[in-house]
Amino acid sequence: MKTPIYILALLFFVLPLLSEAQQDSIVLNKKATEFKNQIDLDVQFLGVDFLYKHRIGEKLFLGGGIGGGFLPKGYLIQDKGAMDVVRAKLTFTYQLYNRFEFYGGGSFSPISFVDSDEIGISYGILMGLFYRVGSIYIGVEPSIVITNKESGGVATSLLIIKIPLKKW
Image 1: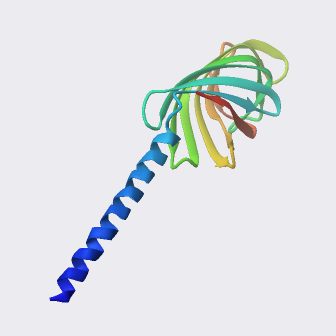
Image 2 (image 1 turned 180 degrees about the vertical axis):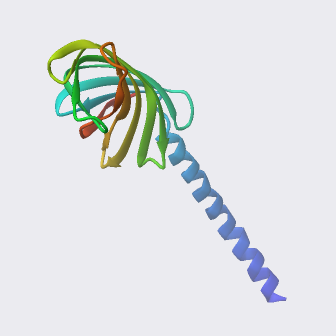
């Protein structure tokens, strides 16, 4: 007869503690996704991009950015390179496990050098792949580049360091 009383007493004291712990974890998860907007600074070899992102889902962002400097890209198949001087881009970003960030989108560069002797316009289909290290992301941005001088090719950026500047 004493066993059921002990079990009831145990359940009476333990269940409220478990429910409070569960509510605390829900509050922590809500705090992690409180911000709706974010500004990032993408630092490349000789240039920078500023990117604004707006949350449209739990792990989805829609963003746009502008960059400048000498933003180099190396073609993967041909033996040549390209460099954007001014670039605008639109991205659709997905975060996975708070460690990985993937984005796809498009870019437009009104001033672009191909093989360091031709000045032209370039368009790109982007795919960014980033891994979080501390509070920054490190990654690359492979793309399909099409210029006004030629049909285009597959290129990739050098290493990019993405620094979140502001979240609100």
